[in-house]
Image (cartoon, rainbow, N blue to C red):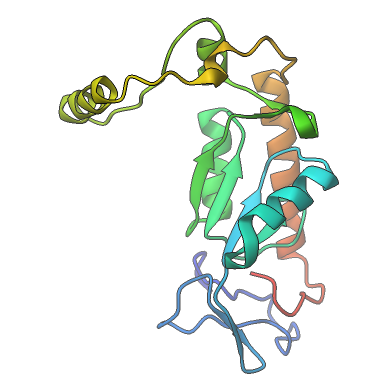
Length: 195
């Protein structure tokens, strides 16, 4: 059994409730019992409270299936992660090889979320924007667009907030990721529509 087998099951385990992903379907299109779930699976490796997670799920709507990293998830299309170390990002990519890992710095005062990182700190210190560019050409293109759109971002003027340190966030994500991988490897009965 290869490590990229999306339907890997321990030898001798009951496969009756394990969804299959035919070769002509993407990871978000799982067929089980004649039903096809075409929603994109989003795994949140963010420390969100239940109320915040429910709000995000409602905002994402029917197109997405939001799962917590602590859930047993076999396939994901997107993994949302806080600003963590490169080693933690690598571990997330290895756990969810077909997923896009998106690093999120998020502050939502309504839900008590303060998941800042280096970009948030730079913005609070007075930086007007933060750009990652893969080439000088792309940086030039960004600057041309920015010059044409002279609007400022009011979020840059917000005051300080408490943040989890990078090593604390790494430890939290790695801990939950380890538990999630262990749950996937256990021969317990899998939920009917899990990915």
